[in-house]
Length: 192
Image 1 (cartoon, rainbow, N blue to C red):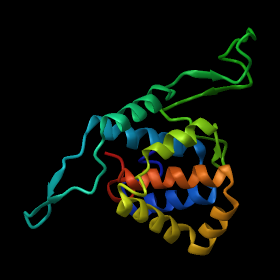
Image 2 (cartoon, rainbow, N blue to C red):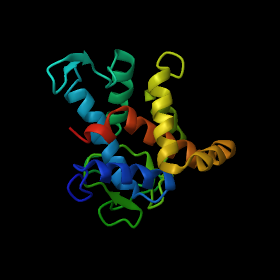
Image 3 (cartoon, helix red, strand yellow):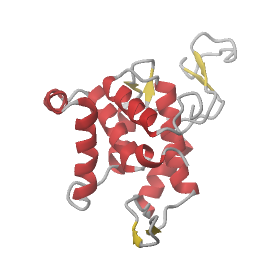
């Protein structure tokens, strides 16, 4: 998905986030990007301090993964599908899953947050888990505000206000996923 969508380019990452907000992104792409971004934070923890281009050490703005967030991310990744047939049939039905019409073949590891081509939320539990990964509005006010500011820049201030007043589950899930991706450096750094 990184090469197909050219996500090494920041503009294309911005465009993908806009498409998620508008409900126009392919769900499988979004699910895979979420998997890869969160996996990168477990596999390559970010340092607390970084050295900028001038050789000056400064605090890293990347989120630091504490034990609670680590457990949340691990639970999401543990539920990720990696090339496994997922049947939508009832568990008691005896079905040849490889040829079943209601079977989805997952090609890449992904977190099942959305389904379909319009980013329809997969299940309510996914939204609740993603919201736990977002910056706390009290403890991490700057990060919380920054995520919302970027969402307003991408989607439009008035459109965000209208969506927030409506509070549909679709909007809540799409905006939470975009804010989570922003918070976990997808826009700035891409997928490491």
